[in-house]
Image (tube, one colour):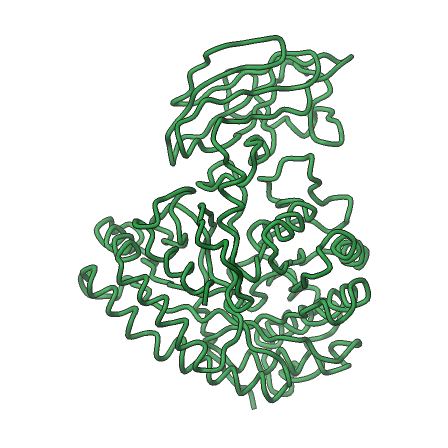
Amino acid sequence: MKRVYVWLLWACACHSVQLEQSPSFANGSSRGVGLNLSSVSYYSTQTPFSDLFRNRDRWLSTDGSSWDTELADSIPVDPDGYPLEIPYKGQMLRASAFLPVHADDFELRWQGEGEVTVSGTQVEVTAKAERSVKFTAGPSLTEPVFVRIDRSSAKDHVRDIEIRGERGYENVFKSALRGFGVLRFMDWGATNDNPVQRWSERTTPQQAQGTQRGVAIETMIDTANGAHADLWLNLPHKADDDFMQRAAQLVAARLNPALKAYVEYSNENWNGMFSQVRWEREQGEKLGLHRVGAYALGEDSDEDSAGYWAGLKFSVRRAAVAHGAFRKALGAERVVAVVAGQSANPHVNEQLLSFYADRRINPLAGKPDALAVAPYFGTNYDDEAEGTPSVERILTDADESIAERVGEHTRENRKIADEHGVRLIAYEAGQHVLAVGGRQDDKQLVERIIAANRSPRMGELYRKAHRVWLESGGELAVYYSSCQAPSRYGSWGALEYQEQPQAEAPKWAALQTLARQ
């Protein structure tokens, strides 16, 4: 008899993140509270590097009049991505560099012989030299700075471009991390939909950090070391065995021996909004995983359902390979092997842990160290919601959701974790108040959701939700996320921009309190 299941994909929608200084974090750290760091990009309102050009996206080609002639891939470049000669067949290269969150005086420098220009809505060039340009820019949370290589000598090509301001961007960023016990680098790694398969394809520290390949693992490790926080690494879904082994060896060699490594295969492998889930299903079916174990095709599952479960079976098989590589390189005592499930669907979590132990599905068998879930609270307002709720109603709805979405779900997941002898932790947590569907175009609703996130009451809800999480059996909670400007796609950031005053950021203030407990 076929069984029909309704999957509760109450998920984290599109997000990205960021940070600010916090002197109060210097008093110590809590291994029970962590932080998800945002994706690094030219449009981020966080500035984690003193060299702001590291935030850049990939180079685009231009003939001086067109935005993108789509010929960048045909231009010869060095190992760090700098063109060996420009113009090349009439083409120059331009990169979106960074967002000038604060007004500042900047200097652009480079090595090599050529000409480099800087532009932007609020950019004013103040001085030029042979290999440098001084300019002012900002403040802006929407208009980035652009850099273009207009001329580059084939004998001594332009390279090693840097942009530095007078503000202490990296120091401010680093000070914000003190006190958090774990830093999760899922967004830094551009984990969702990541194309990287081989070690040679990964981002290196000298390359652009704001591309779809994510930030260099070396930089993630150095950031964790600087914050004295455990490293939570998400491996790309297409990563081959060699990639996993080399990543493990790099972490073993570079991570402070006093720190642990949380190891997770990809992100939300149950969530069909991400391409990795579709790819994992294809791989699972190729291996015949839709024909073995629970929900095998023709026994208690139809073709679509069997395919869905085949993807999850494949994900735990690859997770076990990653876990094994890191346990071998670092020692089992320094590794927390994570399998991430869905907070609102304990049945999925039970199956993930069972699949992991089934040698037909996972030849390595055994078990992970932790089941991770995302106990978000809040309400999603869709096209069927009547009227536009007030700010207070939004906050009340969020408050009322905590009992079920944090308390009840956590208790159910705690039972499953106990049955399998693993820890129960949160890979993400916090508010999940969204306008969805057509309501994303409801400006009044979006504005009220943003206002609710700025309310002191939201900070109180963070403290309440964390208390309920702990009382219901949860352990480590890694909050999502550090900093991002709000939009119709959500108010994910605890901070809206780096160095935002704490009095204007109640979620950030709440996380500071929790991290000190």
